Length: 304
Length: 247
Image 1 (tube, helix red, strand yellow):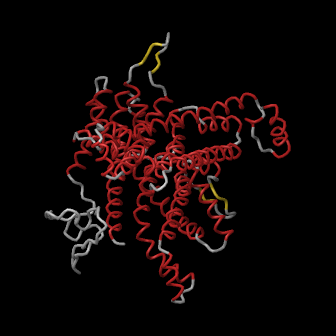
Image 2 (cartoon, rainbow over the protein chains, first blue to last red):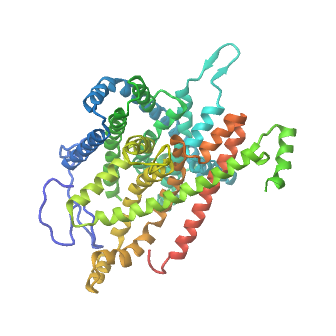
Image 3 (cartoon, each protein chain N blue to C red):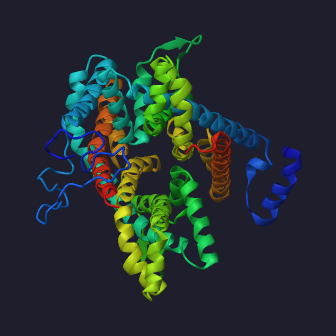
């Protein structure tokens, strides 16, 4: 991970290299002014640095796409790519709804999940077991089933007596996706809280902190760091699940792709380029975030 | 079976309006039972296929050939970072249309049907995660053990199957457990390509009989029950495979 590679004695590795020895290892010096920024490493590199091999990989996706399109062609590959080029803005517009749904679902899921997670570590047994059951229920149900459930059983408008509030499909999709996210974030929070050494609780108690104070001022600030990598990971999983709502007719990327192909007359040579393009834009969006989560995890794992 | 439970659910419908039609009407009952089995077959096929993909992938990741390692790394990144739903569509609609078709006497049928594509697609999707899981397990096997195997004259492939894998398996069972539960839940995606599994059939039943809430309850119980069984079996297996003093 360090910029300069110097030959090192066997057994004593660099700061971030996994040391295979149980001997004490001297960590590299880090001054005051070379701290890591949010997106920038202290030596100027970006955290989300796509190296050559990542470029090769993305190129491979592209090549695969072209190859499959080539294989599927009935004589109109150029035409298919040209139509894809024309329809790409329409598909990307659909993709923006995917992102919108994922952001809102994550927001709701995080807030509800944090509350549920804290309930899971409550001292009151009924609250603890109740929230555990609730979490397990939503965690172990398939996403598609939850989505169907919300889409079909929720009203399409709410009548408040004086005003009728319509609920568009995509809002229902947001609720449908936020349920499993909530349950999984709840597990992340619970896991982070119980992963802290019990000495933290005991020393807080000996300093006369109340339970609430201990939670807010000592435990949770330490947990945040542990929760961020899995939280980002769940965001990726959620974003990858959003195309599911096209089954229920929400106008997102898959729906738009199918509509575009319908408009072009459902020719078989379209399938390859269009579906691979869809795969490609999802990959381009998700991959850097996933890499960033791994980088963060590695960064946080060093400090004990 | 239907004779035994039929009257109860018929009575339930007549008195409370809860319409569990597949428990008292022959046609819906047959359809439902079919879906139960198709779902279970789909899940088992996907589980087995994904584990095989994982084992081969983890082996290939430790290979000497750089091209092999790079292509496995590429496979993992592509399948991990794209939506499984779109992967399924790509497999079924893009790759499925260019696979050879056989003449079934009058009409043509693809060699691999929608069930097959669901297994392949979901198997590769979960296989990408399994590869990573098995690789971390393989890495957890001490080098001295591998060296000992080498000293005893094991070839790379034999050392992998007889020594590394049995040890690695024990290390990665908890993570594998998690991923297989995830795969079980993901099999509902097969709905999108009309595999007559639980989700698809339930949709047909509630479309015909307008009993969405009842069907939802049944689906939830079905899937949570299946997850429970899988977790129970995996935990028992984990317990049985434990070597005292190791891991």
